[in-house]
Amino acid sequence: MSVSKAQLRATAKYNKKNYDRIDMRVPKGKKEKLAAHAMKHDGSLNKFLNRAVDETIERDNNN
Image (cartoon, rainbow, N blue to C red; front, top):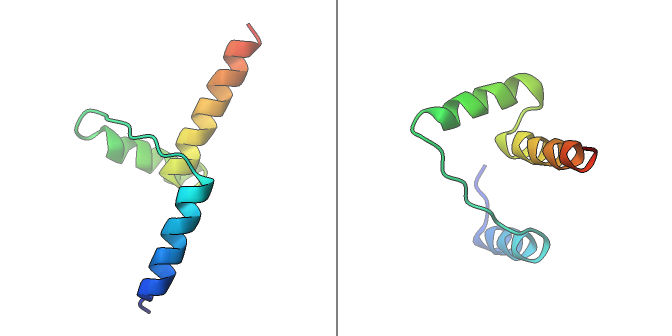
């Protein structure tokens, strides 16, 4: 099933309004390792990275 151009524009507009974007560089091969780990635990690389950041901030604030 293909997505219409209007749907793509609407999604891009929504994402721009509701999310900030952060680009992250990792050594070659590490992205695949991170993605595999994420799939084992919660399904998406983005969700895993957000959880990792949130847990690190919480841990740092409790020290």
